[in-house]
Length: 387
Image 1 (cartoon, rainbow, N blue to C red):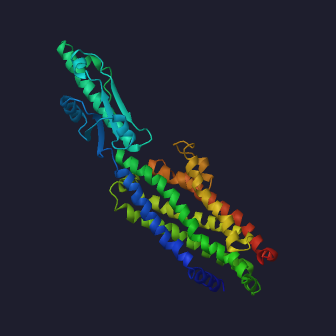
Image 2: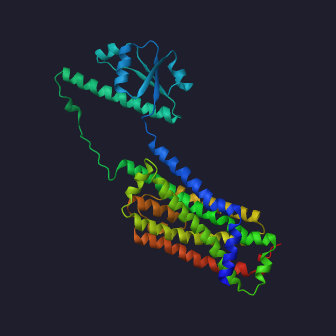
Image 3: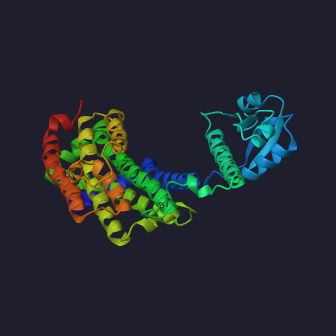
């Protein structure tokens, strides 16, 4: 009898076009769009075509020097350099003192005005290139002046700095993007995947007055509740696992984002633990949606209750900036928060079995605590029959 009820509920849900949209089409479009969007961010580098404005009266020698130290920039002459930058005709402007060459020969400081828009990403990137170019020009000039006075330029070197990274820089940036992308999208997909069934199987049946016929059948209410709960949970699990599969496929077609997967030393245990947490989270969140749907008298009212709860899934990402980067076991007991920590720590190489066990145990405990509440609400016929 339990199997019959479960199959009946599943068929009813899958007949709804909203369910198909949120179960398959929404995750497909969301994962594809955001995966390639994040990859586009990584592949966009500072080697873009930037244009720098200079005064119309500048001599050709200055143009030659600027092209030498800033080869990636295109130099154009304008009557009003600042106006050219303000009107977005160029990304950056440079104005040098007219007697720059004489001051250079006299070993005097040359005033340089760099004009850029701090509110523009392109203008800021162009300013970094210009600053680097002038720094290189300055260093070479200083070395020439010291050599002219028979002074070894090594006297200017107090420290010989050499940086050594703990991981590949490109892989580290890609893994950081994935650590944000995965825990943000998977819970959202699970919540949205189970949303139509949660609203329809309780609030929807109350609104259509079909719940009364179901409650008077010679079946224990607990079996009916379990069948509905299993339906909602399985749809959420399906959506979560589908998102993981789609992400794995789409990432392989990216140029930069796929480098982030190389950071995970043991991908198989990571995937298996991810599936376990997806299953537990889907069951836990199905209970929450189920309780909220029972308290509503219509699908519309259930939507009012569930929408803020689904929106709260993104809040842990804000708290991540205050949680620190080291492994924090107590935070793994916080639902949803532990999903963000799990992915972040997996990509940083500090995830432990104890942390995973604490996250899984917290979901299991919450599921056990919430089920008697949902069972009590479902057994309240006055509540379930609605207005």
